[in-house]
Structure formats: structure tokens, C-alpha cells
Image 1 (cartoon, rainbow, N blue to C red):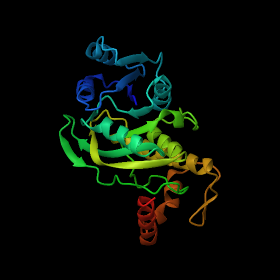
Image 2 (cartoon, rainbow, N blue to C red):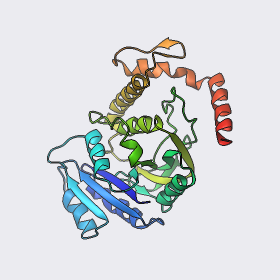
Image 3 (cartoon, rainbow, N blue to C red):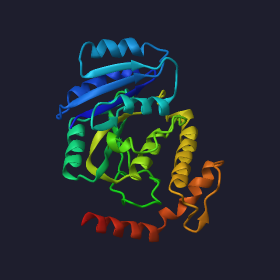
Image 4 (cartoon, rainbow, N blue to C red):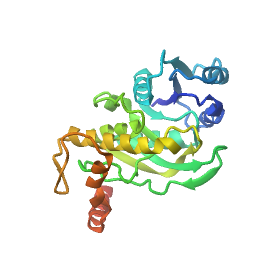
Length: 278
């Protein structure tokens, strides 16, 4: 199985060397890297192409104008040659067994459409700060699953052939395009958690979901959830009517409040126990 590492870049070339070195350090070697620059305005193109040089395992492309992350990531999947794909941001990095662990899960469980593990939040110099403890196995085949609170998080691998049978990533999403992808893949089969930390997430001022972008991130996440509800033809959630149109992100998140209640948590735990024996 070839793993296609997909990198959408916009003005993050200055961080790319750490990303590049982490790819070369992978213990699983059947991979390719597809990079698509979204019309960066800094020196990203020069920096990245100088680093990858003539290594044929890296393929570099450019958007003629800025299209946004939803469009760019969708195009990256189209460009990928591997059976398994996974996104890596150019300002982040992988730990050495990230690809191997994902591939082994796909080989072990043939019903897998998506794998995910755990990330480590790091400072601007990629020094570890805090492990994302919320990542854990989720119940499969639940139409009311919306990854809120977040449990499916990078590092994620997914089958390209299954994605091609889905409604594609929404090109209009400027943030939360990853959640949109997770929902669509989840609707096509089983997802499995790999209990290890694989992804180093760099927190810095220019990050797409940092600082001033947090409110927008919240809004786009709510929109991705709403679109999943409509796609799944849900009309009510826990007895409450789902609005016909998306207007207020808080209205969508309020629909999910019941998932924090103890009865729901108990039911979820029982589902996971039953799922572990299947």
C-alpha cells in the first residue's frame, strides 16, 4: 500500500524543513508527498522546492490564484496516487511510526475507511507542550455522531477509493474542512483509533485556526455539522427539531448538548464495549 502525504501550503514555507525531515524519518517507506501551494505571497515556493529538490517522491504543484483550504485539499486528493491518503500541514510534523501504524490498521481490518491517532500540541519551535487526551475510539455507524467534542483528530489516514464514492470536501469551507472530510468518510464505513501520538501540531500566530480565526473556526465547524445532518436526512436530534437552514452556529452546537449528559455517556460506553467484540 502506498501512502500519499498531502500538504496544502499557504505562507508556511519557513516551517517546512521540520515537516520534510519528519517524513524522511518514517519507518514505513512506501510513500509519496504531494504539495499544493495556494498562491503564497511569501517565499514558500522557493523554500519548499529548494528543500525537496530532485527527490521524485515529492511532487509540487501551484494554484494560479488563492482558492482556500477546502478547494486545495480536495485537489490534493485528486492528485494523489496512493491507496491511503493523509493530510500533513507544512508547519507541523509526524513522529516516525505514523504511516506504519495507519497502514497496519488498514491491513488488519479490511472494513476500515479511516484511521486516526493522537496529536501533541507544540510551541512555535515544535517543543511538546500538551498531548491531546480526548482522542479515543468512537462508536461506528451512529448517524448522530458529529465529533463534538472532538475525538477524531490528526494524524488521519483514509482510503482514496472510498473518498471517491463520497460527496467531496466542500470547497467553500475555509476552516473545518477536515471535519467535513471525517463526517463524509464516517458515513461510508468504520473508523478506528490508533492509541499512540503521531502528529506534532505547531501553535503559532499564523496558524489557520489560531487567535483571530478561532471564531471563524467555530462557525465553519458548525456549518460542517449542519451539512452532515442534512446529508444524513436527520430532522430531529434528541427530540429537538433541526433548523431548515444554517444561520447561527450556537443553534447547531446547542443541539449537541445532550451528548455531555451522563446517560448518553453510559450508552456510548456500552456501544464501544459491544463494538470491541465485533
